[in-house]
Amino acid sequence: MTKFADELFSDLMSEHGSALATARPPVRRAVARPVWLAAGVVGMAGAITAAVTVFSGGTPAYAVTDNGDGTVSISISQLSGVDGANLKLRSMGDRIAVVPVRDGCPAFDSLPMVHPDVPTEIAGATVNTRRGTITVNARGIPKGETALVAVLPPADGFGLVMALINGPAPSCVSGISAPQLDTTHVHVSKIGAGTGRTDGH
Amino acid sequence: MSETVESTERPPSPPPKQRTGAAGAAAAEFERIYRAQVDAVTAFFARRSAEPQAVADLTADTFVQAITSFGTFDPRRGTPRAWVFGIARRVYAAHCDAATHHRDRVQRMAGRRELDPDQFEELVDRIDAQRAGRDLLVQLADLPESDRLLVELVDIDGLKVKEAAVALGMTPGAARMRLMRARTRLRGTETTKGEKK
Image 1 (cartoon, each protein chain N blue to C red):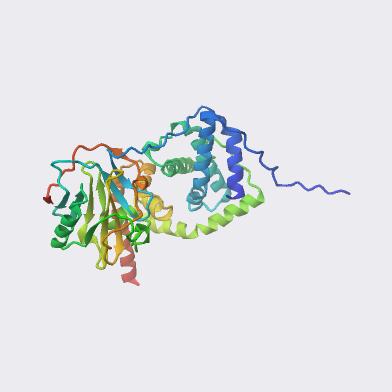
Image 2: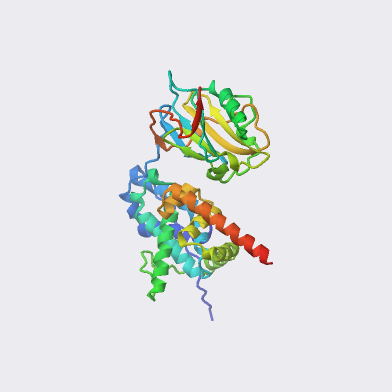
């Protein structure tokens, strides 16, 4: 720090430090898993995430929804849904790839990310905390780039992590774990379908 | 004849007192936040004023308000960075309001901090370093104030959109929409300028 900053801090503590005597330390947000949905920006450059509860019985392995406005919403609730989601995305002509997270695969951080500093601006991507989906502006993905959606294994809660990368996506990635997910926790009762055309299996 | 030279050096700060309990944890957390944000806050004001004393006073006011209201900071409502920039924005608004109404000075909680030559130089350097940022603020002058601040916080200060939204008291969705609109408008302005050249 600069001398100015150092001395300002000394002054603050000597003149107003008593205010801290009655202040309780801010309570940091606790991570609760795996039964919660977490959404928002994570501490991973260039990525946004949605971690979703694993549901059993009756829940589709994946859902791909064409929202009719150029955006596509994706939710994956079982690893077995990855292939189906990719087939559907390819048939729709979208440059979006869903890949599982597995050891021994290329590290997520090593991928050639397009916008490492502006995760919320990635291809107009948004996370729907209530539905547990990542929505991508498929029409907004520039030629030669791919929206990669990585699917975390369900050991610590299910999760989706998205980044926009240059070139094609690898078949799988590694180096992402649930503790990296940020912690805006909202309970969800279902992974819903969008208002447009939805394919889920 | 002897010559007396007054040193502008302050005596070194005393070693930090042992901090224990909740108060100690609060002090440690405040220090962590201060050290992480003070440079960015100083730069925020250095883009708005070329006067080192004003930059020093506004920065001091921001952190006086931060330390005296630290008990109300709730991380569930936003990051420390968003909280501190929210305070900085209000401090600057009060400063402008006072100037508009020709008040001699904003009623300060900190009081004016006298700068020694070293600190003055540091702040002059900081102000010089923000020249490009000040130029950008001029380019943003046609935008509504909230949009201008949004672009500045996200594109210059590096806040996430969600953090900037908290600092400006708007929803993240509204912030994204405003940011997109502002950038589109700026791109249009640049295109128009380019065509005129």
